[in-house]
Image (cartoon, rainbow, N blue to C red; front, side, top):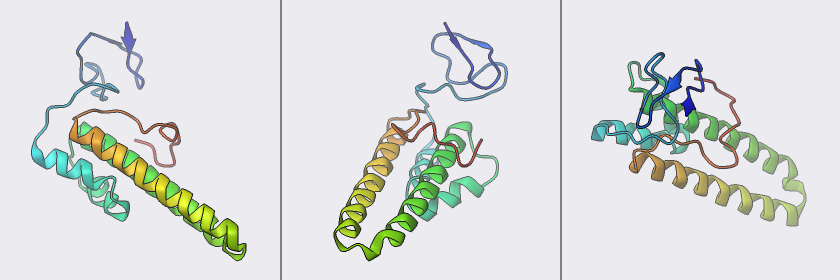
Length: 134
């Protein structure tokens, strides 16, 4: 038996959102419009994550991905600042730049795939990091 992560209410099998508070159920499929898909994809394209995050009255699916995209963007900014700090070390600069670049691409791609599959799932490894909360 599953329970809502926000309010603790019991969830039924197949629920996409909590019947009590409306919070999306992680891993539940979402059947939204193409506009929802487009806004969800924008959430994982760097600074463009601001678009779905700042637009009011978004469906819960889009808002959840917008928050994840903003968290990813902020983590990327922090990582690139760290790369800049260590840029004075020639070998370390190249390695860190490559790792941060590939990681940013992979996490963005995973988020876009989740949106395209209409899944409301956190990103692996960094999904529990919440710099911006719902």
